[in-house]
Image (cartoon, rainbow, N blue to C red; front, side):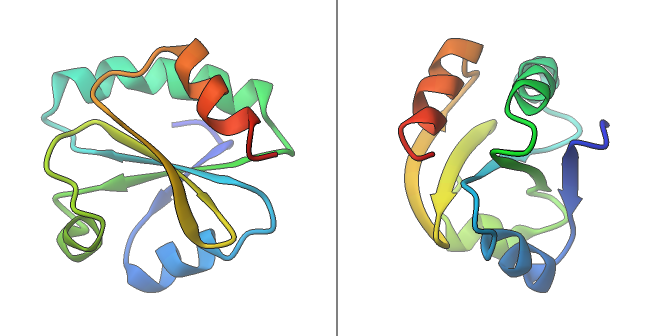
Length: 108
């Protein structure tokens, strides 16, 4: 995983990530999920393009079941955009680079 994408482990780390003054893109995923592995390079490319403007984090739903439950993650991959700690966008399933950019840019 890239230096531009943070792996979140635990509720405290997740809460700290959401406290960012920038929009936060959260990728809810799991290691066994094929579409999640396909989403990874799209997210990586987005993180490079949005460096300094957006924070990008990954949350493994198997290691962070409580967070996944709190945000009603029923299918993965799920991408969510948070602004000021609040969820403002959500996309379930494999998301294209164009759709991801569209989700985030309106919140910059």
